[in-house]
Amino acid sequence: MTENKLNILVLGSGGREHALCWKIAQSPLTAKLFCAPGNGGTQNVAENIALDADDHGAVIDFCRTEDIALVVIGPEAPLVAGLSDALAGAGIAALGPNQEAAQLEGSKGYTKDLCAEANIPTAAYGRFDNAEAAHSYLDQQSAPIVVKADGLAAGKGVIIAETLAQAHAAIDDIFGGAFGAAGAELVIEEFLTGEEASFFVLCDGENAVPMATAQDHKRVGDGDTGPNTGGMGAYSPASIMTPTLTEQSMQEIILPTLKAMAARGAPYRGVLFAGLMLTPNGPSLIEYNCRFGDPECQVLMQRLASDIVPALQAAATGSLADINLDWHDDVAMTVVMAANNYPGAYEKGTVIKQLDSVDTDDTMVFHAGTAQAENGDMTAIGGRVLNITAKGKTVAQARAKAYIGIEKIDWPGGFCRQDIGWREIQREEDIGRGA
Ligand code: AMP
Ligand code: GLY
Image 1 (cartoon, rainbow, N blue to C red):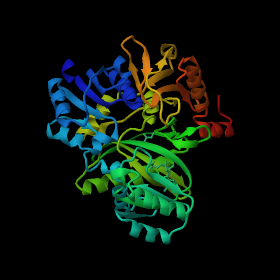
Image 2: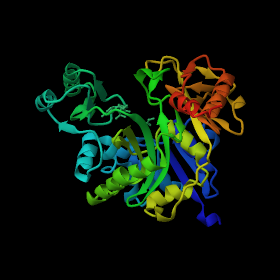
Image 3: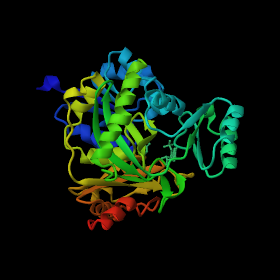
């Protein structure tokens, strides 16, 4: 059956891309797997190559030379920059939405307007391109209230204002250039209360296959304190997303979004990652991302029982209708180890030892900001560096295994949160489950 095998290219260099490569490499459909630029972990399951995702011509040339049948685009920036469109133009299948559909992540105002048009539950809002109108809208509102830069701001463009004075200051900061071009517009929205959950759905423009739920820990410190990060750990599934809430999210949020995007002439193809607030009135959309989460992808890949390649290919080519995905019953948890002082300035080049001692049947390490030095040492070259990922019958079990793995790693240059999964573990204790 060699004629059915595919050469695949994964773009990105995070823990998400290591997890994707690890899963794709296990598929009997995978012939050759490349990762660009990849990291110190992807090199063990794929061939790392130096390709700049901003250089669309170079990506297309590489795909032609290596006969790539599927490109999996990991991060949002190349999607918002139109890489999917360029690949489609060259006749190369790619997982990830085109430039307009990626506006679901690239512009908060775009998503809010779409929700208003399609009657999708989300916080009430106003969208502004000048400070004067934003300030006078705010004068009619009450605190707490949320002010968001419209564009991609590396997770930093959201200000939860406890007072109207803070919100007025946030408007001036955003229009004053604090977030660069991402702040050319802003959204002011109602503050929602409830617990958050992430919901991942694979879409082909028309059909949607629900994948799984997860919860992330965005703050750097234990007890969800300190500055925001890209995510310090995650687990899946999020039990708070019951089957009823999942179905309600599909019917009220995801499917109407796909319909509205198709009606706009921008059918959504790729992974749709919905950040939901589970309010007393049901799930409400906080935001969309147009890709897998990082580190959520790591736990999803560990739980996915089915071959991922047919599903990714079907999403990229508009044929998801016959695809079903099976998931292991086990829960999975990943704990991020980051360079000391992340998300502030951190040292690069510190040496990580004893990584090979972590792997067991249900514990493994996905690399993020690592690179192998010429002398063979594994070194840290980024903020988030390692994802220690474990499976268990309960979140408490998975967590115990993940932290046993962390104990074995010899890396004085790094740290992790000690309490990943605390909400879920509290829930497990409340119902008498747990370790
Ligand atoms: P985002 O960068 O859009 O993911 O927002 C960052 C975080 O801000 C979210 O994960 C929520 O915790 C919080 N947030 C965003 N919008 C709202 C809202 N309307 N109400 C309450 N919290 C929000
Ligand atoms: N972990 C959150 C994200 O990937 O956006």
